[in-house]
Length: 254
Image 1 (cartoon, rainbow, N blue to C red):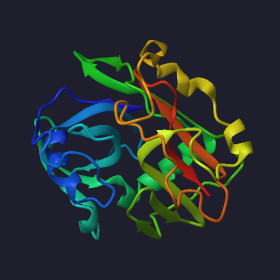
Image 2: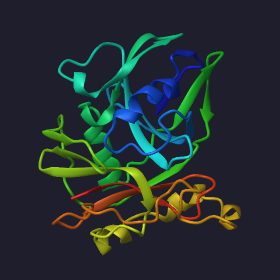
Image 3: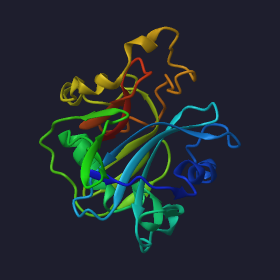
Image 4: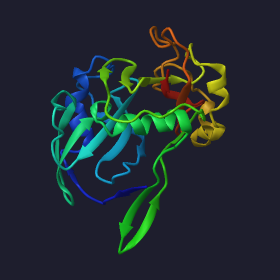
């Protein structure tokens, strides 16, 4: 569960990303155009200390980009490379925002979603002492495997598309520019079979008219090189949001 606050952020998350995204090696879009939110999903920190939110955004008329972030109440030692920026939260005060791939709380949460279908955190607002559920803007669904989950911080993070997180003998790949889930090679058939069809629930059938796999949807139709690697994937995370014709691949493990 993620407990949220009705608060103001200065700068806003999208303003922060507008300055940070153009410097990423996987960035595609208008460097001078506005960054707009497409959808988002969250994971839960078992300790309740760190916020974990993955934003799906678009810069100008570019493709959809996947940006997982963590929010902390103090700087994370040794993580300067992954710092996105600092914001002022009207309720919680100063918050340090990191590229989640370099935050030790994120790899275990991503692995659980990919390998055990742990799903996303349910989002709540507290209003007058009562908790109010916020409907998710997208759905995510992972594989159900018997793989052991990694623990601890990443051993190595290789920024790119996908961004590769090596942790405890597992290689997690976060797809920065999500593509249709069936477009990628190297995903084992048994992993596909373990992916729940629930991810399609957030995909509007009405959007099919005039929707293609090109930049109009923001989802590239090509299968980018270097994705499958030498080993087949053992699990994957797919997602969907209103306006898509089919689920997209968000992450996978090998």
